[in-house]
Image: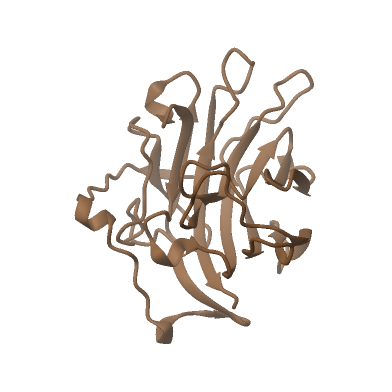
Length: 269
């Protein structure tokens, strides 16, 4: 049974500006990848004990919370969005998310080669049925600063998990049917080479329940990966729940809940 711990994180303006510092000597290795950021929620708090981690701006008391158990440990974070309720909105849109915008270790820039890993659980997820709205629920993003559209995101659309890059106008199904995995942890990995020319790539892998390792599921190679429409001095990652084109009027599911855990960023350069 999932237990929800409602916690609040009070961060002063000065604390938000403090980047998460890490020791290279203490960085974990994943093959040739050096871990630079880990968010595992084992602190039992919404900021996972990481100074400067941005937590949800939605104001509803249950828009986010720490839950038990987690993916591999005791705790995870849960985000909830109910359509039509301003308590589950941020910047005028239905979303509740956490982000690394203010963390140097969680940012990306042109020339970086990075890996992003996360585990996600679709809590009591109502499946898509014929006649339902086909809008997608975004659960993870590689986002530019400056109010830009994402460089990439993963979303649940109909009954599949899809990877999409808006500026490349490409989308790939990475889990053909999520229904067997509702209330179970799915893990994803995105490798990215951030470039302003056609030498970049996005490579996506998935590890589903019962699998012993990651399996490649999508690759966009020899592409321009860093191309914000508005000026952006960096990018960052976000996780939670964002329902950008959904509404009660469209017949979308009123309330969705997701859980995330073990968000990690690696330097592959």
